[in-house]
Amino acid sequence: MAHPSDSAAPWPALRAVAAERRLPAPPNGESEALAAQQAAVVELGRQALSRSDVGGLMADAVVAVAGGLGDGYVGVFELLPGREELALRAGAGWPDGLVGTARVPAGTGSHAGYTLLAGAPVTVADLPREDRFTPSSLLLGLGVVSGAGVVIGAGGARWGVLSAHSSTARAFTAGDVDFLQSVANVLALAVELRRQDGLVAAGRLAAGVAHDFNNVVTVINLCAHLLESQPGLDDAGREQLGHIRRETERAASLVWQVLDVAQRGPIRRVAVDLDRFFADILPVLRRTQPPAVPILFRTDGRAHAVMGDAGRLEQVMSNLATNALGAIATVGRIDVVVTRRDDGPAGVGPGPWVCIAFSDTGAGIPPEVLPRIFEPFFSTKPPGHGTGLGLAQVAGLVAQHDGHVRVSSTPGRGTTVTIWLPAAPAGASAAASAGP
Image 1 (spheres, rainbow, N blue to C red):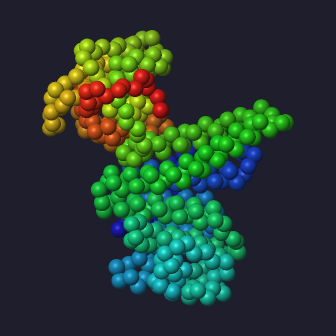
Image 2 (image 1 turned 135 degrees about the vertical axis):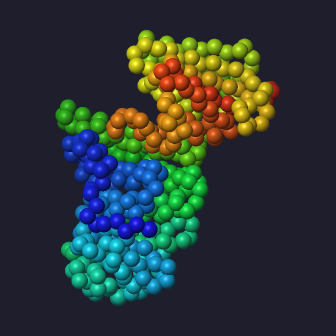
Image 3 (image 1 turned 135 degrees about the horizontal axis):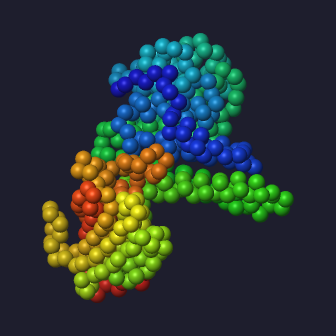
């Protein structure tokens, strides 16, 4: 494994978010700090899914923890194969030369070793007087007084420890420890992502982040709603609260997108008549498109019921419409054609299938880009103009419906995304419309 340097540049993605989305201080400073910590966890999770260099992710993680907790020495300690020592693999705030070379004893010979032994978070209020373990000379030599350590591990395996230490006395709150553990969980599953099947680990990572994060943003959003009704709130304060609400909703939406990509988002299957489904959603989609880009719809006149979640299928169509519009410079056309097929696409068994062909007359996709369009976080757009999750979310949702996606494209002439969904059994009662 690579040994990242403690002189690594600050986290570029997080710095960009801070620079571009810096907001005035909200009324509740603790809520702002909590939101920043959770945003850091989500950004780490996003990077864990989109990058393969775990060493670089660890270097970013310690910078994020240092920023979130304000502590002097943040480190990732890896348990070495002999299980007698832990090595400092990534760090923020450490003197030059220690990251990648420093070692501390395992077991009761150090704070990190004892944390791994306990298998649970361990906080320290007065390190020189600690009696549960022998403080390491590494920390004592730096004058460390307080600290907190959490296990980096998944599935019962303990890979190492993420710790934060301070040379001044401070109390680590339950919220501080939760933040530290959330970052450690992302690192643990990033390590697992390298070792195991990518989508399995990605799903576990997304599900773990989504539960805690959605709880946090729900509370923040509720507090913002309540504060908006407070008497005496001026227009500037109301505007700030509006920023908070929109950002929390955006963050929650991003987590749900990741869940869909990893095929971990909840779906509820009922029989959906696609003719009625499109009659409901096309007027909505058309309102988001300029008049110069009409959406045309036609079918082959046969039955088109599928077993699916109408709300999630609507998300698929919305993503495809957004992508198609982005591919059309000024004037063009989007065609949606629904047909019933007895045979599936190449490599897929016989039907019956319902086929949805979503075509645009846009710029098309270059051949070298086409194989990557369903990769999570892959985008040809400039930074800040999309997450790169739209088509990946489409693929994930279609897979959850036991369907298949095929794409054909000609540069300069347009793109067709074809979705194959199993037809509903004869006699199934179809849902009337889209929506949750």
